[in-house]
Image 1 (cartoon, helix red, strand yellow):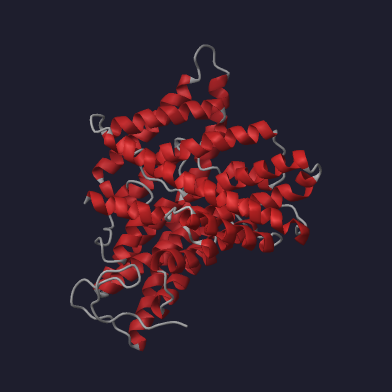
Image 2 (cartoon, helix red, strand yellow; image 1 turned 60 degrees about the vertical axis):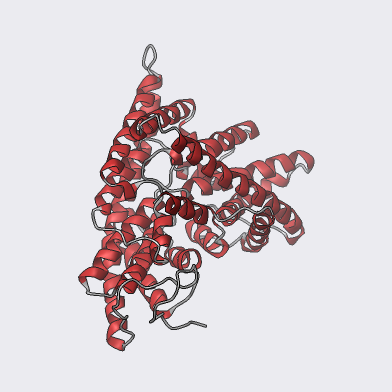
Length: 451
């Protein structure tokens, strides 16, 4: 059941943010129409901007693979060229953050803080900073996700559109939240997942205006982005059979282990942030340069171990066979490279690397189980990779429905939906039992403590 939009000041809380200013929201029919029109126009903008952002990153990813192969064929220490290139990209991305400090990191925690009245809405100058900084950081090979910048760019566009429409402060905050969800929808070509992200993760409520604004923005944004990127799912899968119910206990065990793994990952992200930030003698730009160089070395070792991980996920879900030792190597390198990259003062998110980790972990789990129960990997590898993506997301972000819907939309497959439900619920339960808070709650509290 939906509840009416708040119309009076309340204390700041996760459930009901306090209002800023004396303007009252317009709950009339005219006000609702204005909200939807504003969200639709803002959705068009983030659709084309986010689509162009994704296109550039995909082009950079293709160039990256060829570039590393070219450098490897050069005489002498040719491997230093990709290392220097990654370090240079990270350095330039850090300089962008120096110009606009709000562009640092994912930005999702800032969107949540704005909705709760704990921070002012972003200004439109964040848009070019996040766009350029994100292309430089992610395009140079850092293990970061494209969704953080698109969410934050969407929030900046939504807030600016609401100001232009003359909406009150409370609805400016709501609009930046709604269009931020449209940015996530563009990042993963998942309009329903982007809508659910706004409602389940950010607002944690289903208010009528927020639902309408988010749906309008997400639908138009994804439609416009598809004009640039094409109308197809994020990942192409061969038809797969639904796992037999006799395997359901195995997926539950997998989910419980995934919850513990997600808790460790969250702690690792915060540990790197705390220790890199604590090194105050090193300028922030120099930190980015050093981290970029380290990731450049990882890229030279194997290009699939760097970047957002979309290509690696595509291979795993497409049935590409890897040796178990290679899967373990990718998992370990990306497990540490992702938090290290996020500690660099540059623009970039966490979602896409998490999804790649979940897919790797799923394939590794099945591979290890196949040693005990030969033949299981043939039928369970791809379903477990799909389930791993959703359950790892659920364990770290603590938004299980959003994670499952995102993965279903990205793969255009419901073949593993029952195991996915069981494993994701188990993962969230395990993360809760070990006392691991949602990663964006921790990041938001950390950012607010610095102000």
